[in-house]
Image 1 (cartoon, rainbow, N blue to C red):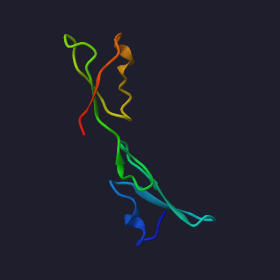
Image 2: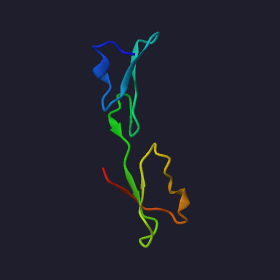
Image 3: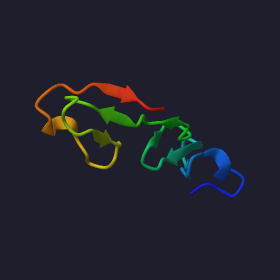
Length: 79
């Protein structure tokens, strides 16, 4: 893990790690975030395969998949 001064390197709840040998900081990002410092947010998607059917929310990391729908879903980025 990183020392106290480097702990703020990761954002959005990411955990900072120091990689010895290459002297580099790295972050383990929580679900929903990615990137070198956990700055990037995965989009929350709304699937609407058919207006007559129910809406399926898909949040990355939850295991919810749109594959149960027989039609190609439309994606609306809510971010």
